[in-house]
Length: 82
Image (cartoon, rainbow, N blue to C red; front, side, top):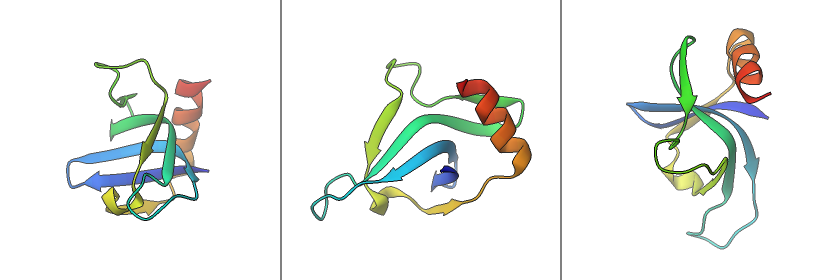
């Protein structure tokens, strides 16, 4: 499922999110092809300046909130990740 993932007030990601069973405190969310969302015209791969990795594991405790993106954002994300 493609979601908006807000990590903090200054970082919103658009990514496929998969919940993973894990021990308490371990990473339990997989972000697939996360893109930093600044605007519809300014979406860039998350951490692309330091890695070619396209899947990241994070703890749900590190996520401020998750929301459903608009159709326009889903279309743009799909275009970027195709």
